[in-house]
Image (cartoon, rainbow, N blue to C red; front, side, top):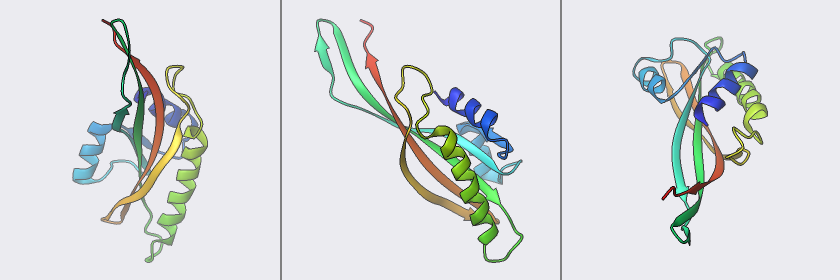
Length: 141
């Protein structure tokens, strides 16, 4: 799901100059992104419902959350309005490609989750939009 999501954003939102995953995010946190604007696709959590048992098979519905972390930097004004405007445009472009999109037949279409500011550091704005999907997990015993 993460690879498909990253590919979709790379292919449909050319305004984002770098799309990475969790390892890239760690590096960017330590020294800021190498290309901007940047977006990092990070698996955040999975929550499984209680299992349903049938003979030796267990079926569970799993709700998975993915964080899309956008990083922008725009120093054209000293109040941050330009960065805020750029962030809004990029969030809308990403939302148009992710919200309601189905990564694979195994997954439900993405819904929106929580969104929030992660950090403002060195003139960079770090913002996370969360998207949520569900899938069914089945034991292979």
